[in-house]
Image (cartoon, rainbow, N blue to C red):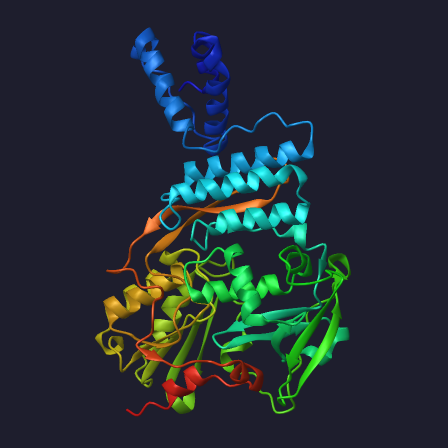
Length: 463
């Protein structure tokens, strides 16, 4: 059978301007399927009009990829403008509905305003401008992944978001005194006011994702200074309220990112590690809750593991259910940020064949703000197809939203950008969240004290 080498004569017969593209396509095909020989071109390709038609189709196919990288401008400001233009062109090519939230005229006006400021902008101002442009898409998947330009110096604390505020959930060891404090203000500005200023920089589609995005920006003093929320990026004055309700002001100095140690959390003396936090970094695991006659299955990542395919885990779990001594199956999706929605299918198929494990009495699914993307689809399937009862808090993603992310890097700064390539419509209407059947909130105090009110509610249900 002929191989790629047999195509050399065909490439040589191709008009000169198109030869590089044809050679590049051949090389890419060889990388994708290096062991498969390429069939010899059929005789009709030798007919010149058909050769031109083939090249036209090739050009159309290439048009859906990333734009051509321009020749770099000699000055930095010009390169920033080129990179912005390239980013907008890439979004237009890849995103399925770029202007579904922000109309095209407003989007273009915002881009033009940023472009005019770029020649004299600082790296931090440029980065904030890019955040604003991407946030206009209104898609939490389409965003910057790389925050390097504003992470040269960072705060020694990180914040977590809850519906009623932001709390310090991690600290550098030398700032242990700030752990578990509620943030009230930054340099005299109330935190809710700060959140309104930062909101246009967060790629989001609902309030849950917005508040989480704000939590990240609150810990970046270079961003706070750039938008006028901090007087000095080297130090900010925080107003905090500790776990006893005592308020105080604290000057916090930023530290170089290269000097960061591990983030630390400090538990109160009466803290106990709740079950749902014990193994959240494993893809999946399960255990018997003997006293409650319940099998608890935590599914944290829609991804396979090299040690054991999920189909094997599902078979073991189903075998345990088949022994007949359990009353309830709890599937916990609260830590699951997505991946491949098909990974869970062996369990769904097995449960669908077992009438005993269908319905709200036997099958309970726990969801929360961290339930996202493919995990949201799994939750919907469990309720729709198996009659599961959903308990917890709203999921972090809109059910009708964008997904199937493709990443690329900006040509000069190298910053990584994620971009959705597909639109999903999973429910009627356009609700901002996917809500549980039974709402059971988890407060910061619950987490701090080691309580799990969601699982406690499930296990307390009478039979």
